[in-house]
Amino acid sequence: MNTKKRITYQDLVAQISPQISEYFPWDIEEKIDNNDDLLFLDVRENQEYDTMHIKNSLHVPRGILETAVEWDHEETEPELVEARDKEVIVVCRSGSRSIFAAFTLMQMGYNNVSSLKTGLRGWNDYELELVDLEGNTVDPELGDKYFANKLLDYQRKPVS
Image 1: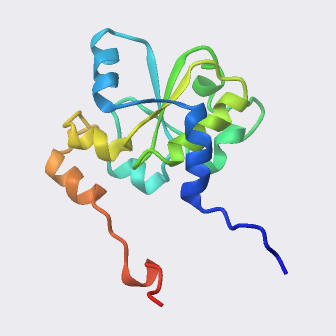
Image 2 (image 1 turned 90 degrees about the vertical axis):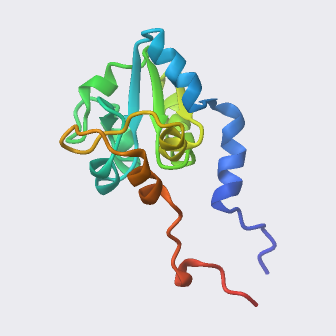
């Protein structure tokens, strides 16, 4: 009989989070206002990024992150490879995937990486600018609808 406790996604986030610097949207707004040289790394999936993202953010889905940060791969992103000493702020929808991605970047030699606490959901709530694929500003109310929790009944834990 296997007595090993099952670890959940939230357990993993809780284990890794203390090792990652996190910033709230208002902290990052201050960094932007101070003209800090920031690289926003969006690790969401293609459709998510195409719908709305932080202007001028670099898009590298989390699934290809490890090869995107190294030379000689089809997924190599030169801007990211060369950013090991630059301030990199990793973003996702809610701030969990970005924790994992920031942890990976730290393990791969990135020296100044952090995660956007609350993710783009919080960014939008704070009414900081998001743009669509064409660069048009997205209305925060549209962002509210997009980032709203959309769990379907079959995705919920069954009631016993």
